[in-house]
Length: 64
Image (tube, rainbow, N blue to C red):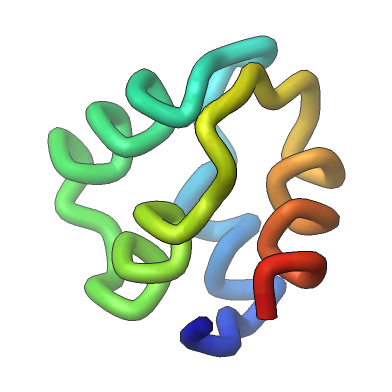
């Protein structure tokens, strides 16, 4: 798993409206052209609903 800088993650996902699914999160990331490292990490997330940025961050840290 790619290690993601949490500041970079927050910067890239600051306009996301939660809750959203992994697919919606990836769609948002691709549309916004976010950092490639962040996008790679998001693609590794479990397929489920994410309630907050903290929820996404926790899932990323558990996937490492």
